Length: 560
Image (tube, rainbow, N blue to C red; front, top):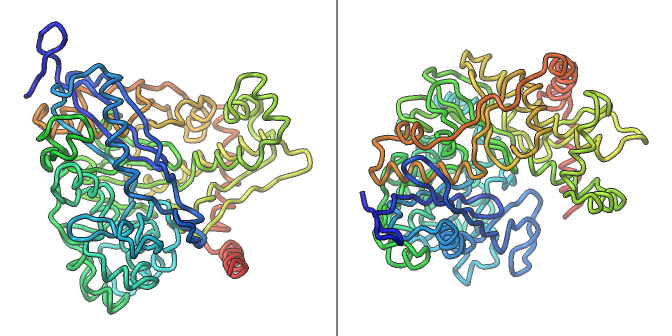
C-alpha cells in the first residue's frame, strides 16, 4: 500500500478519493482508508446544468427531454478533485485509489475512441447526439413497446424488472435514438453509460460496470436480450447489442486501470493511481450505510430517491427497477426501486407556490424558502391541511413504472396555504416509499431495516414523517456525501486496502441508528391518509382513469 509523508516527515495515512456525479453537480471527497473519516470535499456545478428546453446553440428540445454536456463532467475532475485535496490538506501521494459513481441510466453515444458525438461539429445541433440524463422521459412509447413485446414473447428476463421496462433505461433511449435520428444511431459506435465513460476518460480502459449493465442494460445471468427479440422491436435494432453495447463487464470494487497522464494532470493525482470500476450513485452508497446484510434497505434521497437492498431471496417484486445477482454486494440478490421525483417536487413547490410575502418573511427570519415552509408545516396536526397528493411530477418509477403519469393534489380550497401544499408533498413522497416497501414484503422479500442518506436528511420534519408513515425507525448515514464516500470505499477495495466491500464497510461506515422513531398516534393518523393515497394511486395508476395520458396528448399537440 503506497503512503506519503506529512509535514513532519512521518508516513501519512493512506486516503482514497470518491467522485459522485449527480444531476446538477459533481462532488469529490477525500476519505481516510483506516476509518472512513471525511477529510475534505468540494463541489462543482455543471456549467450547462440540465438541458430541458434547448441545446447550447439554441436548438429547441421537445417535452420530457433532459440532456447534458459531457465536458461538464470533465470539469469536475479538473476543479472539484484538486479543491477537495486542498481542503483535506492531503498530499496527492497519500491517495491510493479513485472511485466514481454516476446517476443512471445516464447514457451517451460515442465513437470507438470515446469521443461524444455531440462534440463533432456536424452533430452539435442534433439533440440525440448529447448525453441523455436519467430523467430523460421522452422514450416512454419505446419503453412500452419493449415491455409489450417481451411479455408477448415470454422473455424470462422481464420478471427480473417487475414486469415493466422504464423509459429511463438503456434500451428505451437507444430505440428512441434509432427511430428519431437514424443517422446519429448509425454513427454511434458505443452506446455507453456515463458511469463507464468517465472511468474510460480517467484510466483509458472501457469496462461496463456490472451494476449499470444489470439494472439499466437488461443483462441477466450473463446474457443480453436476444437478437430475435431486438429484431421484433425493429429490424434495424437487431444488432444493437453486438454492434454498440456489448463489452467486457467489470466487477464492482475491482481495478479498471491507473490514471492516465492526462487525467493525472486534471486531478493533481499521481499517474497510475488505481481507478475503480464505475458504479451507480444509489447502489454504491449501500456499504456507507452499513447495509451489507440481507434486508437492510437504503434510501438515497435527493432530487429523486433510490431504494436499494440486498437479499438472500430471489422474488418477483412488482415494479422493481431490477433484481441483479451481485448487483450491489457479491453473493446476494441486489434490488433497486425508486421514486423519480422527491427533492425535485419540493423545489417545484418553492418555484410555484412561494408568494412574495412568504419570501419577505423568510428573509427577515434568515431562512431559506425550504426552511421557512418546513417550519410552518411542522406546526400542523396530521391531516389539518385537508390535502392528499400523488408524487408523480416526474412520473412513477416504482411500482407502476410509468413516466406518463403526473402529479395530483386533491382537497384544495381558497383557504389552502403554501405550507399546506408543501407538507402534503412531503407526505406524498413518504407514502410512495411505503408503497415500495409493501411491494417488497408482498413478494416475500422482507425489509428489516431503513437507513437514509442524502441531502434531504437535513429536513427533520421530512425524516419524522417517513418514520411515522412507514412505522419504522430511521437510521441516518453520518455523512452528507453518501455516494461519494461509497465510491471511495470501493476505491479502497480496488487498491487492495480491504479484501472486499463488506470488510471496507465494517471499517469505514458511520451510521447513527434509530435517529427518528415512529410515534404510534401519528402513525395511526397517517394510516388513514395513506388509505386515501392508495385509492388515488390505484385509480390513476392502475387503469381507473386515463386522464393523465389524454392530457399529455393534448399538451403535446398544442406544442406543435
